[in-house]
Length: 472
Length: 60
Image (cartoon, rainbow over all chains, first blue to last red; front, side, top):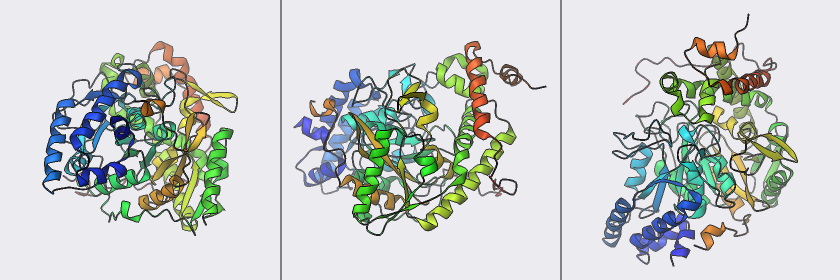
């Protein structure tokens, strides 16, 4: 029974919890046991809150029995990335410098999930300060990919990706500055949504780069992500980048009907220098959608050729500003990889930064114009699949290329523009998952999830799951 | 006269790890190459809208 439970999605568990045929206590115990059992192999968790989670599960059971069921996430056990603040609980950012940091307030997303009845099972590992994509953490050890434990889970939300894929968290949240939700989601074979900038409050999230940071769901299914968006979306005066605009429903709008959908395909940037097998998976997905009544239009976005430069200058400069004081006083306490990035981020001039913002404005305008002609853009989430832990390069059609430069190439542009972007599993290269990315106009999360659902309905993963999940 | 990466960092009080310097030079040159001339980007008129709204920011 426990083995079955940890494989289930929120959409499968919720009716069982609501009807009383499954106890939140039994479910929480199964998830906690599995988290402990897989910790040596996967290392997804920073901390497990066993006692608090069991207590919260008892309270949830009582409430549900008394007829006070709060909704889809009531009684669902979940761990979150360790850069999201829990009042009174150590929040480390998987760093040495913040190893004893205790926030004075909950992050807004934490409060909202708590109010929805979520049971928090702990905090998940991440690339130190979210400034990297491998999750090969020098202070707490590497997180491993449940599909192949010699491989990276992606990052920076690698603990979240691995935990959801292996079933040690039913769902999770990640943060995304250049792809940190979508990269581990693609690599771990799960759903990851980076919402529109300003749609989900960032209050109580330790920043990596203010103007590029986003928080969003990482889940087993599209409906799980939609249900979570219904909870966490909305204006928050505590976040200066929050946008006060109507939210609407996400879950309710999912039908999976793509007839008449216009899919934009940009060959020059998003299909340039892509692993042949990944390319085939993504084109196969587009074909599956056109078979259901969608049509394709080829689009041009000329400024994309400067997107990588603008993303790098912006993220490096903002991150190095945040960590400048510690770089002056205690640089030796940073992991070597991020220390080098903080050094690099001291180099761009004010003119470089502001020109990057001008490029960004131009890119936003071009995206806006493209979305007058097409409903969504579809592209690979990544040009490659997971690399080996400890390697700085990755194979791209027989050539070894720089891992970081390549892995953020297709995810970074929508951090610059702020457009929402979803990664949905599209299939495999060998035994490693491949994600398909859907990018849409501002605040079109419900549309992206609906297109993602149409893809999910084609069963691109052929019901395959990591062995660590199925043999639990 | 152009400053080296090491001189630039030292001018800001940052002590780079000696073994990082060569990689930093290479990455910084790589970024300059990515930037190129920004040809075809119409940035000369781009008002990037750093909004200056009295009382309208950082509420709460």
